Image (cartoon, rainbow, N blue to C red; front, side, top):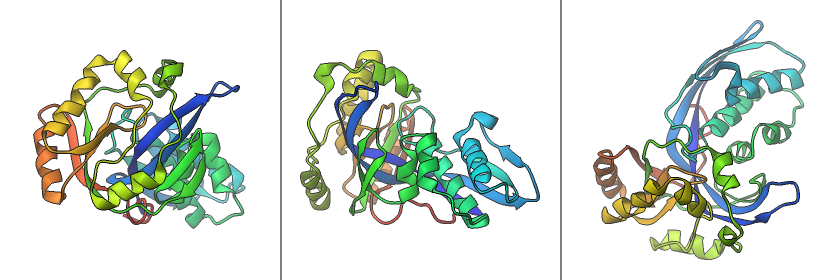
Length: 275
């Protein structure tokens, strides 16, 4: 079984406040992006055989282990993971891989297993990738409301800087907190091809830690991309294009400074089906 594990971008991310449990309350819009990792999942008689980065520490391996245990060890599995989504970019690659492993194993070994409960133990973004479409999220990202997002041509740019998510959250200050995102206004702007009224509360702390990230927005805007925003805790940014050709030209130009992809965000499914 082959499956694609799509990247995500955050169409706005507001850090509302710091909770008593030490986590931050978030309000964000998740959108799938067409860049994706590739997974090959094959049933075997016994054991968990994984080929990919980080071995047993990989979220995909951990997801497989959790599912097989919860399902009563119905058999074994061999997993091949081909990474295309960069790490430390705020694009959710590891979480997406884990979600696709859970879905694949449920198809191979059907059982009365709560996938969303398993997903929440693996990471805050994993439930979104199980949902398989755009979503509004609250809490630490686990409370989801499905959203119908229009397909929008876009460019994702990764400057090559790996940014640890915990480091960025530790750098959040009270002045970085924001109100709820204006969801309806964002959706209307996307549908009309206008600049969405969103923001990312984590840009401030990320820029303080890595000042070189400030240059990225200017480079992308200079290529005619609109709504340029950092995704998640960074370091990847995305920008909305006028059309597929514009996205391809902008991505090609940005490759002088890092890795860039032209594609589509929003619309349809989050790529959770077979490759």
